[in-house]
Amino acid sequence: MGRLSVSLCGVELDNPVIPASGTFGYGYEFAELYDINLLGTFSFKGTTRDPRFGNPTPRIADCTAGMLNSVGLQNPGVDRVVDTELPKLAKCFHKPVMANVSGFSVEDYAYTCAKLDREPQVGWLEVNISCPNVHGGGMSFGTDPSQAASVVRTVKAVTTKPVLIKLTPNVTDVVSVAKACEDAGADGISLINTLLGMRIDLKTRKPILANTMGGFSGPAVFPVALRMVYQTAHAVRIPVVGMGGVSCAEDVLEMLMAGATAVEVGAANLVDPWACKKIIEALPAVMDRYGIGSLSELRRNN
Amino acid sequence: MNDVAFKILSQRKLTQNVYELKLRGDCAAITRPGQFVNLRLDGLYLRRPISVCDLEGETLTLIYKRVGKGTAQLSDMQPGQTVPVLTGLGNGYDTARSGSHPLLIGGGVGVPPLYLLAKRLRAERKEVSVILGFNTASELFYEQQFRDLGCALRVTTVDGSYGVKGFVTDALPEDYTHVYTCGPEPMLRAVYRKIRTGGSFSFEKRMGCGFGACMGCSCKTITGYKRICKEGPVLQKEEILWED
Image (cartoon, rainbow over all chains, first blue to last red; front, side):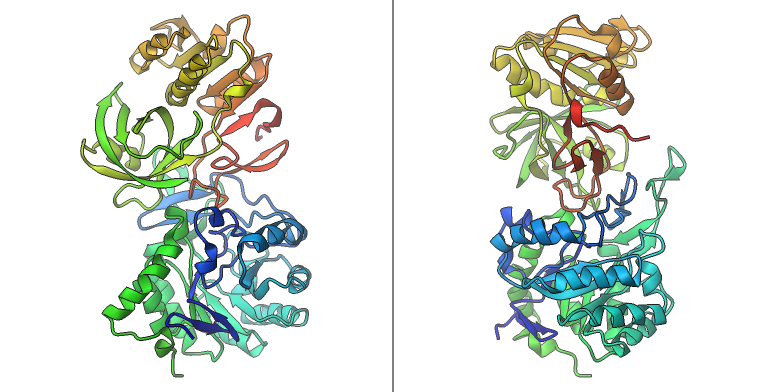
């Protein structure tokens, strides 16, 4: 075990830093910028059964210390991901990848997860039941403990790979949803997805986003995310992957101290494409500053 | 794509709210006219994309209109200050499509990327015609710069206060081999309807990252979904699908 290594659902990561879904494509484009094998892993673009364009544009808005997006799960569909995107990735990434999956029905989740289960490079399934930008699907599964549990049971039945459930912060009690997922057999929890937000253009007096509302992410959400990671990690026994506004090595350590096993980095990749590389490279010196010998020391004792 | 700290050499007002910014830094990643750069400004989260107007060795010229918080902040920056910039973004214009006598059509702050294009086309000894459209005479900029390149230039103003009264499409010449254009979308649509040759159209959209990661600026085309920041901003006439 290296100084930075952590274990996520039985799979060892060289470090806990994971680019979050939707900010890293299918990886190979970032491989033109740096060797992405230095990452712990990454979570690829949210993939659905059928190809999707997503929502109308504009679907991005700048905010103080963050951004809104209402992309709405644009992706080429699972068949093309398997046939085209993953073979391209395999040429430049030699570690297990986290497959992010979204759906509009329990059957959708089962179909997409079953296809990705057959891919040898997929190390984990991260099942998104929390997209704030699509109607009917996504978030509605993540806001109701019993619906969340039904997605978990369905997905677990079609895969032998570890299943992480990605949760929304747009609920009154995230812990009850996390516990329902754990009880239904989830192998891990990742949180938080984006916070539902909006901006208005003063000149037009209308919402900036064509979809009116969108998901808020970036450094501004970090304290909210950290709180929810802390609450969840102290309430479940399965590993928790923390995310939300993580922008530097210090944020990674806070997430781990709150009880996260690994950490995803999202919006930061969009303003600095080298953000994850810089965070990983900065970790040893920041750990030295706080007297942390290895990240395994920070593993929660509950 | 490179991440480069540029130093501001100069900044001047071209019109009441349009600025010309000259920066010094490594421009090696900028390979074509019509590409853009993405500026990181203190205290603002997302970068601000601005098209490349001119490039000479390590000197980069950007022209932008002060419209919001980001461009207002940029307009207050002084020579000597540094700006982190992602360079070499987008596909840019392909001069190989020009034919012997291309036509360049720019509207308002869509004019700047056509300057480097005109310069490159003139270096390739092409006969370059240019139409620059503005609302009114006081908004006009870079007329002399285009003339100095040896372009045949027509200026239009909507109110007729300078040049031809009307829109850019009221000043189309008889004969041209390809059209390169950049400007507000209504102008692009009018140009699309009126021209009789192939055309390279540069589009503007709100972007997240500017380098293809977030899918924020996607659009539908005849040849599939494209990211304006990556497979664009320049689309060919044959592939454009106008929304609504």
